[in-house]
Length: 276
Image (cartoon, rainbow, N blue to C red; front, side, top):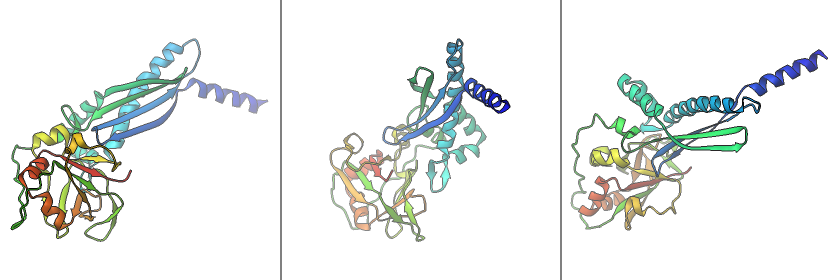
């Protein structure tokens, strides 16, 4: 009898408490958004409206907290995560807190009559975005892209698509699955830098990023790289995160040959396709 009473008390306690489950946080690399969602089930009694309101307030805070988890998984370059970057800079950390605190409401859903799900997002690129926080200290200088000596061909490519799927070998012999990074370096197989963030206009990086990532090689990238992109297969990585992509010398020559192609690169018309 005592055991039954104890179980009843436990069940009542559970029913009174909001039951939370961290549902999802998702990065949309093509459209440049990070989404965070949280769901709660609240008690269905005479305080239904109040319970829902309180659940909504708590969900908002929990959803925003998820953003910090996501930022720890996004690299700026090599092995420096966004979260680590902001934690090391007090002024930037305050700006990050403000950005997340003002996360935009994406949608409100009610999977069941006593269940609510809230989704928020922050922008990776554009005004009031992660990139705008990162780029405020940059000047406007851009290094011109230089073609390989003795090699010039008017390629007229409208952008570049790099296929970086599968396992790639780093310069120090490790097998790497490329992960998205906000800043990338492209090298040729001899180790020479083909392109880095200094070769792309800072205003372009702020607005739409240095490169966009996708998980679908068959996706239509026309709005990002134009109708005649140069398609390259990465042959390796320079580091263990994949922020340094390696292409063949032949591909690098074509990539840097022709004023139209170099202008497309300076405008950030680059897509990198990776595995999910």
